[in-house]
Length: 257
Image 1 (tube, rainbow, N blue to C red):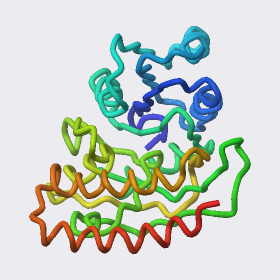
Image 2 (cartoon, rainbow, N blue to C red; image 1 turned 180 degrees about the vertical axis):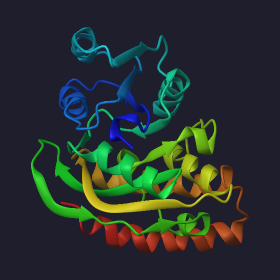
Image 3 (cartoon, helix red, strand yellow; image 1 turned 135 degrees about the horizontal axis):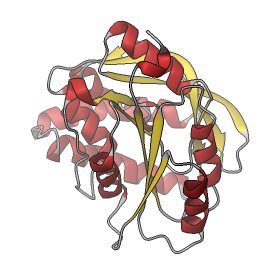
């Protein structure tokens, strides 16, 4: 089957004050060798000049859709609005400061189509805030089940592709004190679906410098709350899952540049 005929990909991108990085993010999508995509950018009431930059890109490329929220509502709400507007068979997620390598969609969609997968993810590399690539690459397990996911938050949002026709309608949880992307993966895999990894570096995650230690604690709190509110785990189970998460998180952060 022709790779171009495997279905449209809807790229979900929330944006808030992203003027420093959004053009690079958009251009990484425009550079994809898989050209059957739409990019849905939802601005969450930015007060910098990112809106003007996005509108200029939109006017030059009809595959870019732009939605401006009238009230600041957070990235989960912004992503959900993009999902509602999506017309593609596949959903892919890319935040406004991250980037993809040119063959990301082509390789991942082919991987999913060949194996009849509904949920996939890939390896990714860390880059510094200014765009310099590091030596740190997060390689992925070949598959993750619901039970695996409860002990391992390894899936990078910027690498995920979902087949909506197989999974059905998806929606990120709107708990402000939870990890909305992890909560979505949890909801999907709890249905008995397995996520499959393409262990190839196809995306670049931008590691910004602001409050790294504070962000670690914030991430830990959100993970705990996700177990309790989205997974509805009891206290003993939550403590066990959180212990496993913590061990992996420590190993992960010791590699952070």
